[in-house]
Length: 216
Image (cartoon, rainbow, N blue to C red; front, side, top):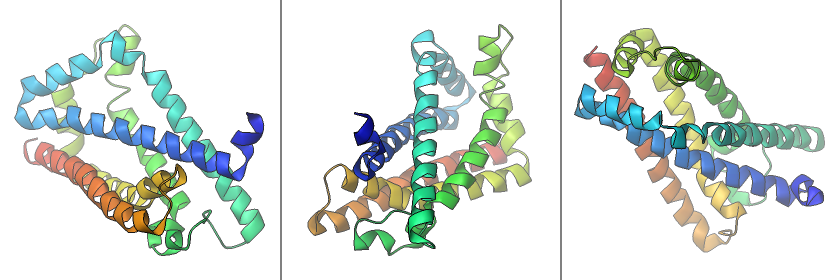
């Protein structure tokens, strides 16, 4: 088992599975945030649901998914830098190196991670963490207005969503390719699906951020 996880195939499988797991979380997160478009009460209800113990218990699982994904991404990148010089991302199919995103996945990942910490300090630390510590959580509608009402912060978030979009346009189809959808027939289809998935996800987050900004 250990040899599998440290092999080239094993590393890509772990990266792919953890990445797809995090993608599911992003869509759940988008769904919860989208309730803010239907009014303060709807958003509060969604946040209260996410604070239930049955949901909160999944936080360590989610954290583990991020840690595993980041650790293996770093591992793969360092190995590639050492073995291939200027090649920054492992390529197993000629189609993987035909986009800017494919060549800059690690850099995009660093940007996403940095803003993730920024995001957690705005929302998770003020809501779930306070609730866990026995303190009164900050009102989610107030946090949305306070955060996205600041134009500079809004722009920073949009840059984050753009980095996420580029990361997903390559990462989604690459993950599916790694788990078996790896022939030329599927390659073009998966790329199209990747752009659709990335656009729906990131455009959704941008719309919610803009809505919160103009209603702050």
